[in-house]
View (cartoon, rainbow over the protein chains, first blue to last red):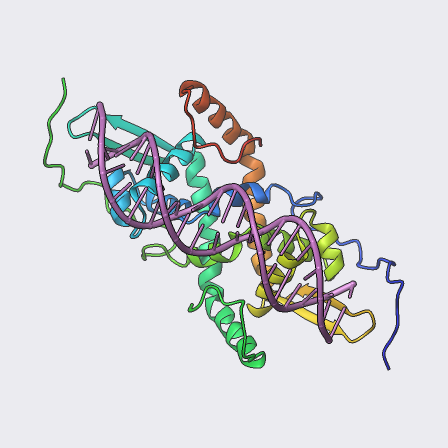
Length: 147
Length: 147
DNA sequence: CCGTATCCCGAACGATACTG
DNA sequence: CAGTATCGTTCGGGATACGG
């Protein structure tokens, strides 16, 4: 028997105390607009290990192009998350280090890393199970592939 | 006087104990590939408040298209972060809720939100200062705009 | 109401060449 | 070594129409 409920306007969902803020999306989009790109987090992590020169960063982060490293460091610098020091030597030397604010962001990001390691297997398993159960011929949603 | 140091190969940077892992980038890219898109986090936050139907999510997240909501919920479902229940009524009804794993991710994400609120002003200030000092005519790096 | 398929645009990124 | 400029590609994601 198929239930025909056309009027489902009534709201139930108990008045949950919500998480950290009573607002809609807090300032989450803000951080993710900052971290969501391909390289920012990696630069942050590398700099959390100590002072690094431009070249060192590039070598420490395989696959990053000179262009992207420039853009990424510049943004972090502009936002006051890293400090940039240029020595007028020949050839030039520039090094980058985290500011206190930058370090606090890095620490927060490490929280995500911890979560990732703790749940990587569970997610891979769930994904495998899902793929098995929904073993369709034309699947799309493929994304992060192997964990 | 410009110092001419051609051989800058010597490494200094003390052997810092690093953060949470001795590896290069830990599993950070993994999480960010998951959270880095425009909508996943918002869905997570909304679902952290309780069970939601498809339509409710769409209304709670202004600007999301039907297509993106479908893709986003499907990914979260596949990864075992949300549970999906479809009732064969007419019209259909589907609701989503966080799994324990999904909730733990949401909690971690709230950590980022806290950081964002704590440092939003500092970043805006730094950015304004940077823009003032480097008041060039051809600026690019513009991104997050107003905080 | 819930989900899928198709088209299309713009931002993000890589490759390359050039400057100080 | 550090940074800029330009070009071409790739892809996320919005709009719309359709199916169950």
